[in-house]
Structures are given as structure tokens and as C-alpha cells.
Image 1 (cartoon, helix red, strand yellow):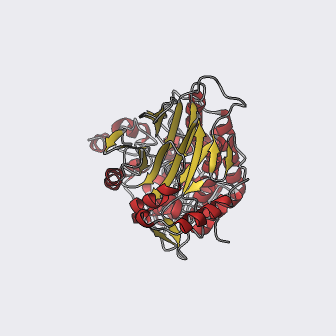
Image 2 (cartoon, rainbow, N blue to C red):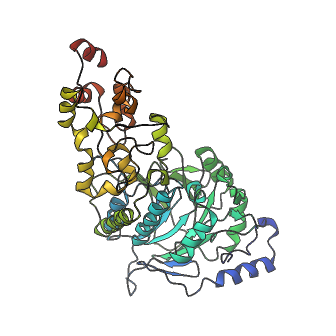
Length: 476
């Protein structure tokens, strides 16, 4: 079945015909009466963000918070406590803001971390977490489009996900999502419309020029005080779009590598919330009469924001689903990374085969954190998550670890994680292992997961089977 906006065609703003507007209104009316199961009410593409039953004498100031480029990170980016990001902190930031502001939440796109079965499952729970926060609109970015049109339409229909895009069409020429949504907050009407760069076009989609799509959509935004474009565009395209659209009050996007602080480009306020969900853009709108004044800031989701209880439950539900589905390594997007580190013809022997010839080295390994890597995941319930498994197991996706249920013998960071597949070496000791151990550390001890990693200090904790001279060389 085609989505409710399947009959909405793109036309240039200079030649909008009355019959076209009527057709759009008819399609739009199909959304009337629909309700979404979160803390704000959705109706006819409209959101009422006023949570009170009455009206206060003095309206609260309005804050529009935009997230983006979450890249699959439900939790903070990386596995150390001092990393930034995560939906659990995002929700706390919003809850604190709602004490003094009418808060509207939108997402600029880029929430999935890949297109595998595992990534689709995670994206489902990212959307669930966003909806628990009162999400008003989620723009379709490149990672969302990679999941496929049918999947996105299912999310919109079954999960009532407020997906928007004004410039993505299927091959039949139909828009695959609502082009915009409007929000009422603090006596203001805010229009949120979405676009994505043509660079992210897929075999299933055609992407219209973002500027033309916005100009086409603007005549439909009746009685709106503020217009904000959620634009999943590289930095150069983001700036070009802002310079060409003085009609739009703010353009918030990504992916731009690093988060861009808010600045004026032409008449528009421009910024980006990006980099694995570590940063949010907060736009402040005056609640006074007359034209709203826009200002804003970039906020980092640091450990100062505690974990939100509803988001913790959502995370536990995600882990429970992973436990039931037991995704194999090939059902994730991490296998290619593993192949790059190891050999695609991996033939393992497991660490249990090592002490016959390497007793001292095996004893040193048993005392290391590597030998207990799996237990650290179990303490957090994260042992079901492939994103964690890939660095806490051996031979992930290349003939060693396949899944928690199917290959329990390859849990922990065993000898072959550093030395390479050792099946041939175990049968014929003169056959050397494939990898140089000290060259493997950065594969998992990267900036995200081990920001304080310093080779010499870490190597000293695991070094074994070496003479003093070779140890000295290893640390130079």
C-alpha cells in the first residue's frame, strides 16, 4: 500500500496551482484522528507539545532540541564511563529542560548504525527511546534510507514513527514519508520539514534537490511562526542550502564530522547535531507576541546527565530482544571489520590448546583482563550485544565466535585475538601464527572504547614470553 503522501508530487514554488494545494490537503486529511502512544498527541501531521491541561498566565519559553547522527549508539559512544552521548542522558537533559520550558524534540537523521538485521533491531529501539522522550519528527537521513523503503513504511505504519522527508521518493515517484510536521508549543506553531542530500540516493529511491523540495513545501506551512529544516547534508551542502533559503528560520543537520556550533548563514541559523549522538542543538524561541527570536547552543551529553529510568528500561528491552534473537556475527555490520583484522580463512584452536607448549604464557594470560573480558559484559547484561561481543570474543565472524549460543568456546579475548588463528600452529608448532600481537591492540583499544589507552602502559600489563630486550623494543 502506498503511504498517505503517495500522491504528493513535487512542483516548483513559482507555479504552485490551487488544484495542487487542494490535492495535498486531501492527502493530509488522511492523517486526522491518528494518535501515537507517547506523551504528546499527534494529529494530522500536527503535534501538541503543551503537556498541561490548562493554559498558564505566562507562557513558558520554548526550546526546540535537535539530535542527529546517533549512528546506533543507544548508550554513550564507547564502553567507558566518561564517554559522551546515549539516549539515557538525552532523556534526562530533556526532562530537566521541561521544568522551565516547553520542549520540542526532533532528530535530523542518521540514527541507524548500519543496515544489517542487528542494526534494524537496534534502530527499532532507538525510535522507541525517542518516542518515549516525546519525539515530534525524525528526518530520514542516509543511514535510514539504507534500511529500505518497505522497512521505513512499516515503521511509520506499525510503530507510528513520525518519519519525515520532503525530497525522498520511491521509484514510482511517491514521497515515502510525510514531508513535514507542525508542532504547537507555548502558543507558537513550529514547522519541521526534512531533507537529505542526493548523495544518499539508493536503488529504491530518487532524491529531489533539497532546495526545490523545501520551496515546494513552504506554501503548505500555514500559520506557522517558525520554520526549521532538518537537513541530513554534508557541511558544504548545509551552508549552501542556508544561503539560498532566507525563508527558513533555522537549518539543523549533519553529518558534518564534528558538531557545528550555531551561526548565521544569510538569514538562517545553522548548526549540526552529529558525531554519534554526543551533541544536541538546543534552539530557544521567545514566547512573546510577534515574530519569535531564535537563539541557541550546542550541548554535550556528558556524564553530568544521569541515566533516565524509562530509557534504562528501553535498553533492557533491547538486550532482552537480542538475547531471544541471538544474532550471528554475519547478521551484523561488524564482520568486514573483523575480516580486515584477521584472515577470512580463520582456523582457530582456542586458548585451551596453548598450555601444552606455552605454560608460562598461558598463566600470564589467565591473570589478565583479557581472560575475563566476557564476564565484564555479563555484569552489565551487554553480553548479548554484538557491538560489545566483537571486542570481547575471539575470531568474531571469521570462524571463531559466531553467537553467544552457537559458539560459547570463543568468548573472552583469547590468545588468537592477538596472535591470529592458530589451528595450523597447534598441529605443527614450527608454523608461525599470522599476526604480530602488539599491532592488534588498537583494533579494540580505540579512542571511543579506550580513550586513555597508552601503548607502553597497557602492553606492560599483558606482555609475556619475551626477553627484556624484545620488551624494550616493543615499547619504543
